[in-house]
Image (cartoon, rainbow, N blue to C red; front, side, top):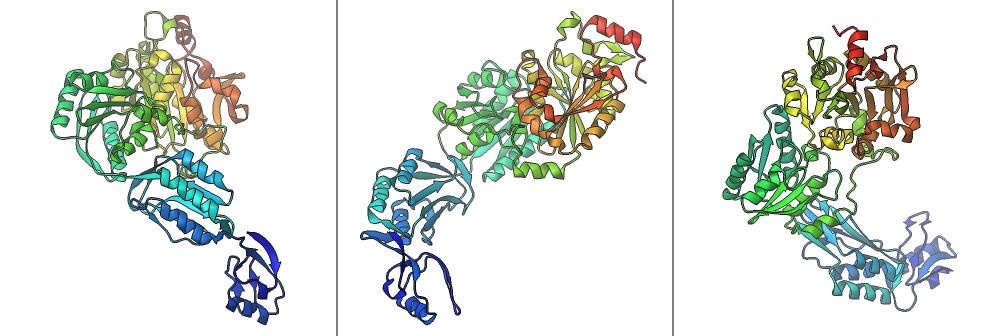
Length: 544
């Protein structure tokens, strides 16, 4: 094909390469120059027109697109009629699409005039969603190129559609006595919504104590009732293959396919098999409606795609689902943050074993007639926070016992020995998108009251673009606590390691720091050692 200026009378069989606005009609680019078009151009006294002229052996863009589309297996999809050199392929039902990446690459390398594009591998598609599009870019293309594409497609399947089908799904949740029952109802609702979106529903759901015997019994009951997929949400995250959930699967005659998933969030997911029933040990992030690795595994199961180690490992490509603070938030997330401008979650980090205090757990030490951790929780609950949680680890049963009547949400961190970062991640895994900010409170700041907390909240809410700000109280130039983090930093906080905590990010984001000078040293006065504790008791009046 070539582009050239022609006398209309000598342009028969060509295509208009630009639009012509005539007095009686507009002739659009791409219009075939017929005898009627030539007559109209002569009447308008148009002397030359810019045309696309085919070489010998060239075929029209629509014919080329149509020929290629017919070579693709249409038994599980439908192709729209070719127009302007384009054919769109759509799915007839709720499906997952998988494709041959190397084949698509070879097709696009045949000639620059051919552009074949497709959605992401394993993309979930609703009925009538666009799967792929084929575009012949010029008006004419060599027939040889079209034949090469058809030859490639005939030798290998370019992509395949897997329709989702309904399965019998059971949900087992386990609990500790001190946990609020509301979190289990929320998990049930989120799981039901996930399944409904996949054209499925829960067959049965149960809530049982978090112990080996109860779990084994309930797993057997679900298997006997015909469950094809069994979801288990533990009271605490699965820490390794010796934890309650994997041990129970093995005890009833099942096998563990894999523990751990190369998708974040969703790392702590477990896949097992008991006979014909697939068992999923749900990660903590599955309690949130936000996309995570559990969604991907569930979608493959509903599409009858076998789950094996190779399949799970392949999810790592594109498996980092969390945004990082150095990039702008996705548009949808930015909109949701604006809608919920003043919703702040508060968390108390109380999982450590306070080694510098000796044999005592400092959180249980008495301060003014109540334990330190109880006083901290009371002040948090009295503040203007929208909700409040506490992360427990070391001596979790003892700490929970002194605060369980307060109505504060308890989060168990089974990995507390790894350091403060693991507690931050445990807390963030419970957050849904309704929270735009997170206030992090250390459990050993006995002088911080609800008044201090409210002042920090007020300062943060008045900050421009606060989703990308870190509000830190300070005294005499020393940074203190609690700290409020805008939502942009949630992924970075989740990715921290060891015992440094969020403070490790301060130097990485100096422009995000919003310092608030405080008149009270309470925000920088912690109690790491027995001496610190005694100094506080001697030098500070107790809270009223």
